[in-house]
Length: 232
Image (cartoon, rainbow, N blue to C red; front, side, top):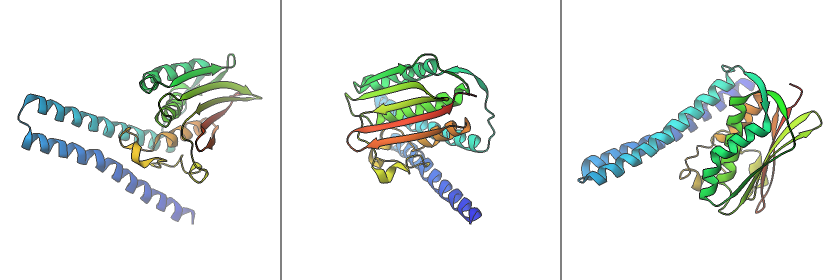
C-alpha cells in the first residue's frame, strides 16, 4: 500500500508539474507567433518581447522551485548549520519584500523578543520565511496588515507571520502545504505563483527538525507559525 501510494503521488506530481510547465511555454509560443505574424512597428516588438520575458521568468521561478523541492526531498543539500540570529534574518527577509507590500499600501512590521540565536541553515530558513511572507502579501488586500514576530517559547524558537487577509477555510487548511495546491486558483496565475511556496517552506522547516502550524479564520486572516528547537 505504501508503494502504491508513493507511485500515485509520483504520477500526480508529474502530471501537475507538466501542467504548470505547459502554461508559460504555451504563452511564450503564442507571443512569438503573434509578433512574427502581426507586429510591424518596433514598439509592438518591444511589447511582445517584454511579455515573453515575463513568461520566461515565471518558467524560471517554477523550475527553481521544483529543483529546490527535489533536492531537499532527496537530502542532496546537507544543512549548513551556523549561528543565526532570527531577528536579523527576519528583518532582512521583510526588507527584501517591503516594496511588494508598499505597492499594495500594506503595513508590514517586524517584532522581536530580544536576541534569539540558534544553529540553522541560513539560506534554507530564509527561503522558508520568504515564501511565508510573500504568501501573506499576496493574499492580504490593499491597506492590510502583516506582522512578523520572533519569540522564544520554553526551549523553542518561534517565528509567526500573521496577516489580515481573507483567511483559509477549515477544509482547505490541511491542503495548503501540498505541492501545486492553491486556495485562490483564479488569482495565482496573475501573481506568478505555482502553488509551491508553502510546500517548500514546510519542507525547509522540517529539514531543521521543526514544524509549521496554521491558524486561520475566514474574513479575519491567517497566522503561520514556524517552531524550531532552540537547543540545536
